[in-house]
Length: 228
Length: 243
View 1 (cartoon, rainbow over the protein chains, first blue to last red):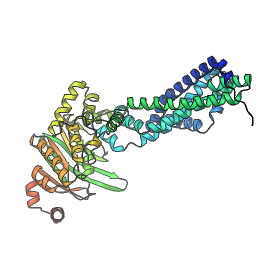
View 2: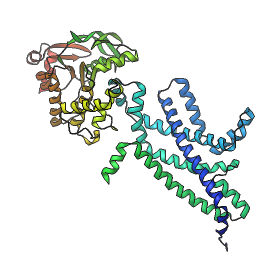
View 3: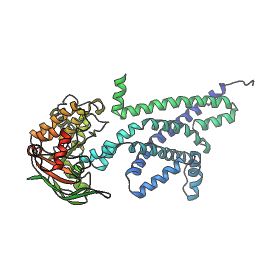
View 4: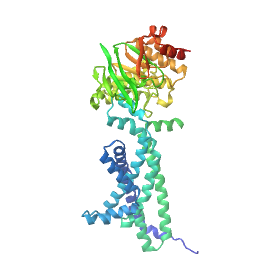
């Protein structure tokens, strides 16, 4: 057990690590917000839509939630070319991440929408609001506010899961680490450092998303300020 | 001119017929109380009047609209028919003022500033001029119910329906809500209210309808109906209610 930690070699890889970190951030942000938009749209269809779109959303959600993300990436990157659809590694993983997150978010938001009491809809309809207005002004805001915590948890999990993109050679933080470790054999040092960076990102994302939540929901903001 | 005209309506929930051939008319400026035991069909009748329940047979004309299954027509009808519920049904994520402004802005296309002024005016009408920025969960039940009344009023309805609006309230809070409704009555608003407040019905309603088993069992001018009920069923109902 006389292992001699040498973090010095990592300095040489600083530009690569910064690049990898940037890519991880990009993939995470696109995945989180793209998936959020997709998930909300799917959730609305799954509670309000006509039968066929509703079934399609159901199938999509079940596929995304019941298969590993790595397999999803492989299907898109290695599988689709057989159908004549050839995507770059970067586009493939972006697509996989958004689709994957969309499936999870759809289920979270659907639960939120279904937690809104039908009497709220009655009140809105009695005031003459259309179905769309009722969804936008009466159902969605409190529904999203209610599921903000699970949405943030899912978003952070997604951020961690972006490390899977390294499996097809995308040089995100983990991808860069794999290259650096194979070139220097300082495996332990490199992955310990990477792990700490992910921990840091975790806090950054939580803080960021909580801030977004507070910006979006005036009532949550006022409650927080009221308590402070 | 009649504001509400109901002709031979029937409503079934599965095998249970809750409204059996009900007909009635409410004139402009009239206040009509609907009384009766739970399950007599009075709330269902009220909910049929703005299409929250769909009738199986018969014709309803209200505020110049014929009851329809067409969504756009139903929406036009609901613009002119206000309803206040037992459970207030305020939107919890909006302040009192925003609750009131929502429909005038989205449905009538009022500008924010106009809607704000109108909302403030409606809040003052129900005695809550200083609670514009309060969220529903910061208000008492009675205050929430008065905001709900103001929210309906802001659409300037032709007729207002009240569905047991004080049943969830303490006696003390009940009084403030009833006072708001009485003010509206005094201003000539056409209203129909399902209520368990017999003294209020007697004092405020011009006419009272007693429902029993899905039919209008007895009706008449409130004073006469309460002092001199004609049927033994109403007599025993009033005796139980008034003690």
